[in-house]
Length: 396
Image (cartoon, rainbow, N blue to C red; front, side):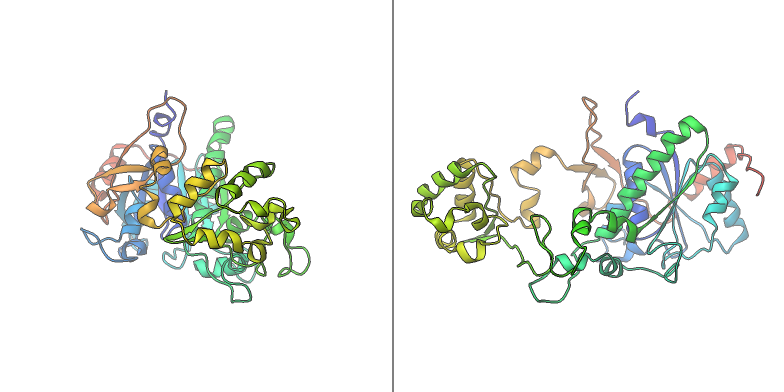
């Protein structure tokens, strides 16, 4: 049995909007699980995040919900609530995120107790306890509370938001890992469980060595890979047509010296000011005070010329890529990040797939598109009517 085929019998109910829950559900759908997306009559709000594509839904919705099925349920309606109960009873996994877009008041822990083999993954924004519990957290809120806003921006400038949904994606990855771990444990114990993930907690876990450095004056700490907000922003090295990275690793002084000779900067090799040569390049703390000779040469060269020369001398240099360049880069193409999505609007037919590969197992390259709102209601109801309803555990 292949790794991917082992997930095809997995039934997942997703009651979540936005980024975190849908992204976790998509990871499971990509592995072959049957993911039923339960939407309110208004639909997942990400359907309206951006200009609509063909069919009326925004691109972000298509990229977070490929391969799923959609059913609309109004949980204020008795009949729809009964359908939801039957869906959950027949599921292996339930992903729930009661954020500001989908208030339900459902007791997810109670559902986990009611169906002992069910793995319930409850995602919240800021945590389930304390005075902030239950308050809706935005991406900006979570980044500000976790301190991520201190890693972006200019020296002595205001804190800035990282420019993508990093907390939502972090929570999705942690939710996915927790779900898989719970399913593995269920194989041994025959019991599911309730697991919780907060977007704040997920983003804090991404800080690792950064958090370890913040023990004193949190705005005045530094060190390699531990640069605080007082460290000047690293924006690369200017070329005539953009910016490049510029680095030679530890132990590569001879390679750096030969590179300097190649660009007529051989005088730097024996200059006492460049004895600590690596601090004048890459993220070195002297690149702003001693990087002038490199900058003068680089300003007359293109990004391609600089990178080619550095890489030929066993250093590493790449151009800072714009979106159009990223997917066309030869090294990116080798990784084959794109998958084909059938049936979706043209701009959403190529999407980023899962990054891991399973040995010699053929890579799955074609996926179903994101569902239209309520597209699969009839089929899902027919399946429920054909299947006997599992017996719930006695309520505790």
